[in-house]
Length: 378
View (cartoon, rainbow, N blue to C red):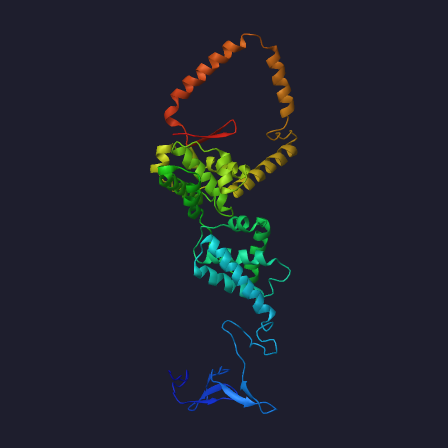
């Protein structure tokens, strides 16, 4: 047994007061130990003369002594410890299904214990708190292959309820979690899309796209699933795989509108205008403003221009999209007035468009939008 030393004078002569459970230095009087737990067994006598063991048993991980009574172990644990024990069993069962490490389980158990101490579990579903604690533990232990929606699918719980509980837990415990890198999910989603032997090549291009998105401020404040979906769709088309928007949406579990927004934002960046060969070899050091900032600035400029036009007395320009119904009616009238010669005109126009397309074949951008379909350019 190693004898304790005084932290002030370095003395080794320590005197203990067994009744108070304290130990102090004889040389300077500094209290070295206090509230010590004695593991010795002491016996006493009851009023009837029967022998009894003095003291109480404190289990590992418990904060209070176990109560003695005629029922033995039954009903002796406190409600708090019973709640933590039940949550620990749920954490271990979920971790076994999702193949999480023991460190993640221990971290999730500690988080749940802190949540109980802060009375965070009152009024909330226990399974939601357990799932959120596991997710936070995965984030802290660099095990970032799982998202919150994975726990939602496994437990059949609304993902928005889990998200709300997660935000409240982070705020209550004052946690600082690292930002999620969407590139950590690329390999997982690429395997689900079944690219065969080209999976590694597609994943490499997708990771490069994610890095480009991050350079252009497209990943900040966005869910990683949308970033991964846009990157995988572009990477699949870059490697001549026909993967539709519906297939990507089913794998990454996002809305198709979210995916199209990410593609539209990438189209407005300088990298979106590069050819396929240039994108793989050239890395643009310039970065653009965040899409939210650009959209807000365009709106402010439009409002300012409209205010200036109203001050001058001219009518402000109508926003794009107004008067579509009237335009369609005029277009239908022109179609009805056209005769049989329309077919020849369409053939000539198609031939002119084909020649123009062949002339500009070498300078096509990486991404363009046509008829609500995203087409990659090589």
